[in-house]
Amino acid sequence: MNIILLGPPGAGKGTQAQRLVERRGMKQLSTGDMLRAAVRAGTPVGLKAKAVMDAGELVFDEIVSALIGDELDAMPASQGAIFDGYPRTAAQAQALDAILESRGRKLDRVIELDVGEDALVERITGRFTCATCGKGYHDKFERRGGQEFKRRPDDNEQTVRTRMAEYRAKTAPILPIYEARGIVARVDGMAEMDAVTSEIEQVLSAT
Image 1: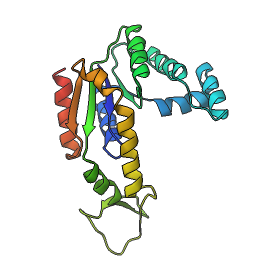
Image 2: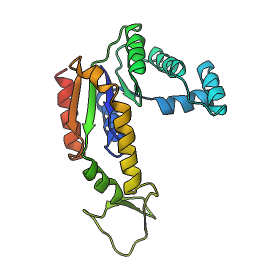
Image 3: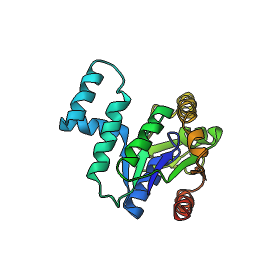
């Protein structure tokens, strides 16, 4: 099974992707991670990507498509893929269709973790960690005295709302494409983690 997992930063997409990897043996294909790995390894595609990035330019679609193709070629045909960060445009969506079709695969589901912007702002801006052990807490749910805490500098309202706007801008071009195929499913991303996992499993089991 091959799926696209969508969700803004803070929606829990990374956690759910990792659970799919563990539960279903799928492979998470994150374009950012793949680019960095290819550059470090000095692969032909990685060398092309490095040249583009060194010139201060955005990596173009052909390079990203080649990376995805290489990753799929290295995977067993029976192993499913989770696409993370790709596609982000209509052209990339068409490219992904071609990549999958040429390898006897197809896109089965697009799952979006649906979150309310105000609720997401509260979730992210309220989180903090113990400076000593790194354990996570939240203003609304847990407070601890007598310890030193720290917050990530980008866990602020303006940054979260900017990321949400960017996410909406990036997903807007591709969602109608997949909605027309009837393969989009929305899951309540603000629910408890285990509940989100259960809902995703129900969607995939019914696919």
